[in-house]
Image (cartoon, rainbow, N blue to C red; front, side):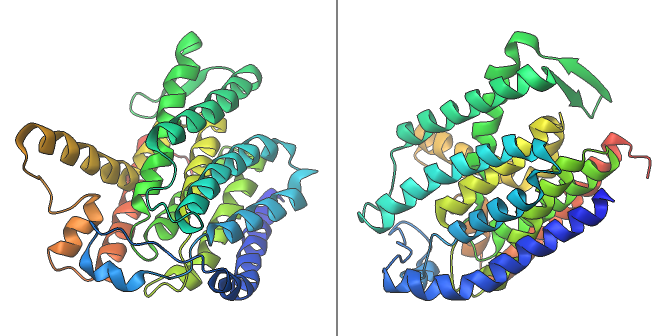
Length: 320
């Protein structure tokens, strides 16, 4: 039964992270791959400076190994896996520049966007050739064919989602916890739509995020870095594309979208008025500066992600 395989994939990826991470953390410390905390961030985060980062490498290792174990039986795992690794590579380069070359901003924004669009366009072009250009709209409960607009529209959404996940990775356990919940939702959707391959792949992400939370929950002893956040963002949207559910994943990942929009609004409003809407963006920092405990912000954001998942379930009218 493929649902048993999904559970096995989740357990395997969970155990890989749980077992490997204790060996990787000291190694990252030895290499002095510590987090570089920006001066314009919350003052409470300065104590996190030097905490090992690039833990996303272990998340990636877990996803790759588990996917390869099941690849022969579920070959459609291949396309989203390649997209996931490709986005993770961009994140690795960015982290390497920050941590090793000591340039706190990493890759320039233009460089990141060019690389992300190249990966997105290539992935979506291949998907369109094999699965067509139709996508599901949950609000009207029907599929629409985007035709020639499929690749450009979807590539913009993919890059936006990847960077939204990246912006969410600002508090201990926030991005990993939210992504675990979103991936679990995608696994459930895949099971009921009888998409065996995406159920397995979603399970690998659930397990890896669950294992990573053991070390990333407050107070974190390791961070995923852009290696992990860009990788997870790419994997989430890649699954949604294969399931033909890009709109749905934007609803389920509503927390990601809110975080990204808070940054966009802050920048635009400041340029126009020289004033700020939020005390600091992304939004999670705003609540920190209001006096919320970091762990409280994370739990509240997890709860909102669960609510977004329930809303999405209601919208697609699943017949469970």
